[in-house]
Structure formats: C-alpha cells, structure tokens
Image (cartoon, rainbow, N blue to C red; front, side, top):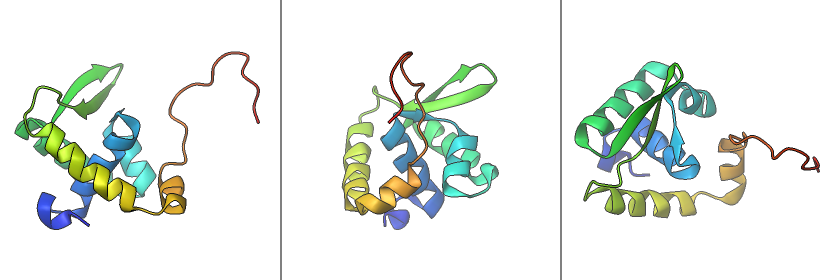
Length: 110
C-alpha cells in the first residue's frame, strides 16, 4: 500500500511488524512474512540510520523499536496505523498469529 512512500514492500512489512509487536528483530520479521532475512536487515539498518528506529542488543539478537525522540516517528506511526487498520482482520490474524510474549504462570490454556 505505501511501498511508493517507503521505497519497497519490505519497508512496509518491517514497519507493520514493529507497529504490531512494539519491537522485533530481523529473523522474526522475515519468518512471519516468509521473506529472506537480508533485505529485512538492510531495511532495518536504513530506518535506524534515518532515525526512525533504534536498536539494542538482547542476547545475541539486535531488537528494533520506534525511536520516540524522532520528530518523524509519530507521523510515520500514524501512516502505518492507517495501513494496519485497512488490512482485513482475518488477514492480520494470519500475518500476526504467533504469540510473542510468554504466558503468565498458572494461566489456563483455552
């Protein structure tokens, strides 16, 4: 949808994924969208260089999240939110079906 704005489909997928989960890393984004890891890493690096994303080391992984200090982040998140909301719910559930947080201890599985 916004590939013309951000340059390519990978950029859109990266931003949608980070918008949905709050933070993520390259291999998970590539796995969820069934694409190669290299273009995802390149796109994450471009966004970090532009100041839209920031990263931190967590174990052996580099985890990316939106840069709250950037003046552009709010605008970009608003655009991504519009794109995210325009995706049908069934489609969103297919893309983002994997649970990323651990289940609370003792919580029943339904």
